[in-house]
Image (cartoon, rainbow, N blue to C red; front, side, top):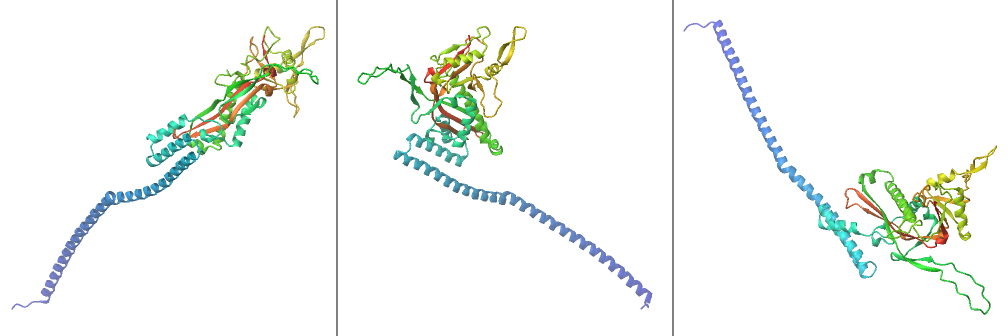
Length: 437
C-alpha cells in the first residue's frame, strides 16, 4: 500500500472544502431563487385577491351600502311626508267641518283641498307637471284677489306695511290726502250721493206751511274696480340674499299704484275705472286770460279763486303738474320803468323760505299731480282748484291684498298686489277747472 503523505491529505481536504463551498453557494443561489419565486407568486396572489376584493366591494358592497342609506333616508323622508300629509288632511278636514258649520264658504274649502292635494303630490313626486299641481296652478292664476278677508284670495298686508305704501301713494297722488275716503264693508258696489240742486232757505212763520225746496241730492250707482301690480321674475336668491328685499318690492309696488291711482282720479273715464275730475262734464271751467299763447297767468289763479264759492274756499287747494308750477313761479309783476315803459318786477308768487310756512299760490296751498296737462295749448285743462274733500269721493273695500306665488313661475316668485277702488265727483260746485283760452 503506497504511503500517503501529509501534503496529499491537505490537498484532498482543500479540494473537499472547495467543493463544499461551491456546492453551498450553488445551494444558496438555488434556495434564494426558489424563495424569490415563492415570494413573487405570493405577492401576485395577494394582488389578485386585492383586485378581486376591490371589484367585489365596488360591485357588491358599495351598492348595497348606498341602497341601505337610500332606504334609511327614504324611510325618514316618508315619515316626514306622512306627518306633513297628515297635517294637510287635518287642514282640509277642519275646513270641511268649518264649512258644515257655516263658518267657511264651500268654495274656500274646495280651494283648500286642491292646494293640499298639490302639496301632497309635490312632496311625494317632486313634479310640477302632475295633475294636482296643475290644478293648483290654475287655481292660483284665476283666484280673484279682493280686499276684506283672506278667504277671497290673497292676504291683507300688515298695517305698518300698508301705512308705508299709503305714504308713498300719497306723495305721488295728491287726491289720496285731499279727497274724502270711504270704506265699503260688503260687496263691490255702493251708492254715492250726487248734488243735483242748491237748497233754498225760506222764512217760516209760526203757523205757516214751510215752503219746500227743490230736491238737492240724487244717488249714483258705482262699482269698485280692481287695480293691481303684478311683479314677476323675483328670484329666490334675490329674496334670500338682498337685505330688506320685501321692502324694496313693496316700495316699487306702492310707487306704481300711486301713479295709476293719480291718473285714474284725474283722467279716468268712469267706465271700468274711477271717474276723473278733468273728465267729469258737470264741473264748470274758467277760461284763461292768455288767448294768444295760452300760457298760465297770475290773473288765472285769482280768477279760479274768486269763481269758487266762498263756502268752499277755506279748505281749497290748487292741483297742477310740475311744468305749470315752474311757469307760475316764473311769473313777474310788470312795473313802470324810469323814463317810461315797463320792465319785469318782483315774482308774483315767491315761495316761502322759512321752515313751517307752507308754499302757496295766490295765498292757497297747492299739490303736484303729473297726470294733469301742461298749459300752452288751447282748450287744455292745466289747473283744478277746489275743496276736494267736499267734491270728490274715493271709495275702497278693505286694504291692500298681496298674493305671493312660488309655484307658477318656479323657481322664481310672483307678487300680486291688489286693491278695490273707485273715485267719483259728488259735488261739482266744490271744484273749478282752468281751461286755456
